[in-house]
Amino acid sequence: MKNKALAISLFLITECALQARPSLFFTQKEVSHLREGYQGLKRRDLFLSAILYCDKSNWSLWINGEVIRSENAHELEGFRIARVTPYQVEFFSEKGKSFILRPFQRWDLK
Image 1 (cartoon, rainbow, N blue to C red):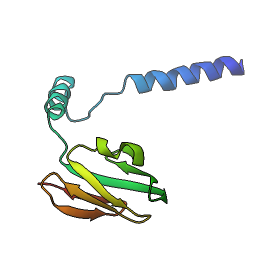
Image 2 (image 1 turned 90 degrees about the vertical axis):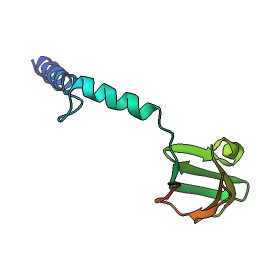
Image 3 (image 1 turned 60 degrees about the vertical axis):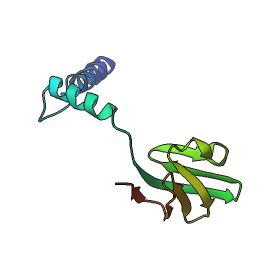
């Protein structure tokens, strides 16, 4: 009897979550239009979430929600990583500007 009650309560919990609307303010059609509009935009800023530093040639950065490692640092579009320390990262933008970010800082190119 307990197993049946547990199965029913789990079903009701998951069923309610599946029926939740994606937005309280917009219809489904409006949400899809907003998503389509944002897909064409390119991100022109950097947000440094964290630095995992072992040494000069072995580090990882969390930038804009993605992991950038010392091996694939060239994959950062529009920016070049000049130097990484345990506390900060020095970047060069494609316009030649140099700037430094520490964790939880953002650089906006606007």
